[in-house]
Image (cartoon, rainbow, N blue to C red; front, side, top):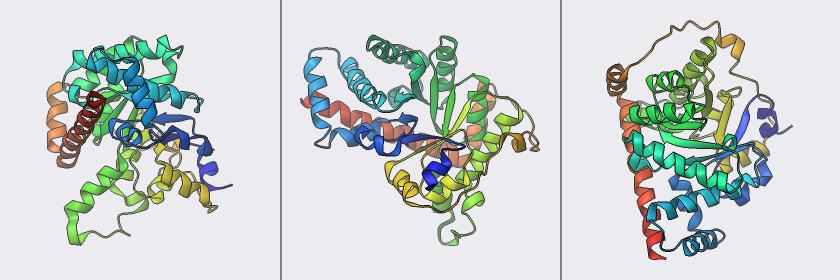
Length: 315
């Protein structure tokens, strides 16, 4: 078997793209999107008609609702291809507004349900701020499942588990990027690869903690820079992978082994912790990498959301 098929034996493979026409060749179970991926897709000739057609249909509606229609339209196309779930993101500009995030999630879910999609097939993506996690707590109690994104630290993962979040997306590649940049000329690529990759270590720590204490939140490693990071996390609940890395896995017949095991995790030497708002904010602030990458990620997604706004308003 090729590496992609090998990986599917013990990890749910998710496609990380807005380019739904690429999905079928990799047969992922789920798919994730974000504002940057949607923006990239709608600038391609294959997808531009989807944007223009949706905007034309809802011309005169409040702008936020038109944007939601565009995002859900992409999600509906993806769900025609994948048998599982699609993740659709709440506007990053609402990352520090719990009530507004909940309201936006309600509207997104309503659009999917109006189109005949059961809410079990949709994950609402929200940034892993304190406010975002509390919004997810509310939504999960209502049976609306969430994917907490822009997750870089252990405290974020613990708080998500305590909130009963369905799934988290720790960002492997962006953690790796930060440490590599911080090390500068002293960075040793060989010494910081595989199990020693800082992004891989972060996800493995979260996975072991969840399995040790029976936390039902699914761990989905995200934001990969190379195949080696994926191989080092084989066995993680889910991995969301870009089309180029899916193709690289599909092209290789090299054997892979499972690296993360639930039973092994239960014997790991970790201790239960919990956070309230004050201790969460302090722990996140104390982690320079996580606080910087969270802020950077929110700014980038917000900027792309604004660019999508401009494209829609120009039509």
